[in-house]
Length: 142
Image: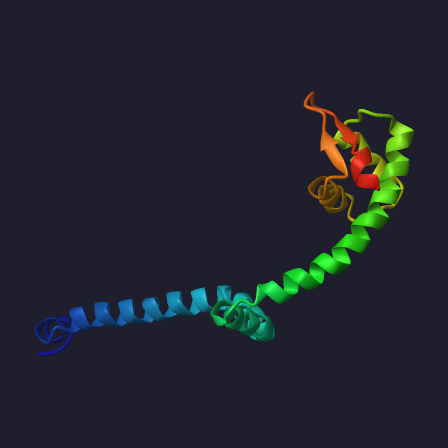
């Protein structure tokens, strides 16, 4: 028995189909690996940052000391920012819209105007007047 009859008799067509499917599966896996290689390399290059993130998830949070330390430095920064914003508010006039104060703060080069003005609102230097505008709290100035 020779030729196609021998191939059919010994399940040759099934083995050929199986071999082709194994080869194509390997080629598909190889193409996915090559396509995602840049992500694997980025993960390898930034592994220290990822290790720190993972370690941070499992550490106990001791935020009590950090909060008290940041409150001390925040009070000085808030007082400085209050002086700068007071000058801007005098220029705008009271009551003033908050977007206008933010816009002037950006033009004057104030560092982080959004967070600075938010800190002033939280500290009570700037208070809403109930009509959509804000006013400078004179009691907080002293």
